[in-house]
Length: 206
Ligand code: C5P
Image (cartoon, rainbow, N blue to C red):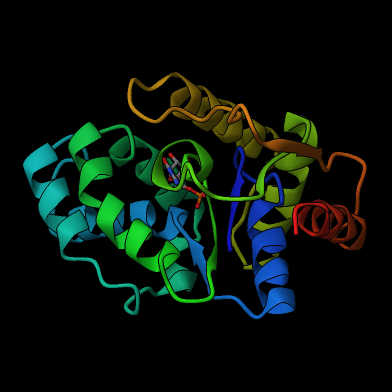
């Protein structure tokens, strides 16, 4: 069983994916970490984020075990990740790692932007998790504040709008709803209600 959750930044897909994975006893891959880690490697090496050769090398060198999540979750890394994620060769370099994860015996839960459309078109169910941009910005601002980052709601809203635009308009694997995806709008749902709704979708496809 491969469960694919896609959606824009701070829609709640990561939290839902983690909880569904735990509930179903399946491994979980947050594919955003791959793009964040690629960006982090470039920054550490002093390379330009648009240096596609260096970005591909960094992407190919990633292993699923070596993520420092605390460092990768910051606001600057989210922005940098969306820049490297628009480089087609970087996306190609990360396909096998993601498909290999999805092919684990028993299945897996993956979340990202293109899991249901490109990485695992055979996934079932596919859930496209969304929420209003204001609700997403509020959640992300609270999350960043909780982690000690000094943030301003208006700046986070602006960041998310910019990232939505870049992720939806890129030429390769843009963020979009797969034709066979269930759409789950979490604007008015708390974490518990969103989880129940996602679980109902999963159960409806078993
Ligand atoms: O999901 P997260 O916010 O961690 O993703 C960071 C960035 O990585 C996104 O804004 C997007 O540009 C990119 N990404 C992607 N495809 C994925 C996952 C993330 O392009 N499957």
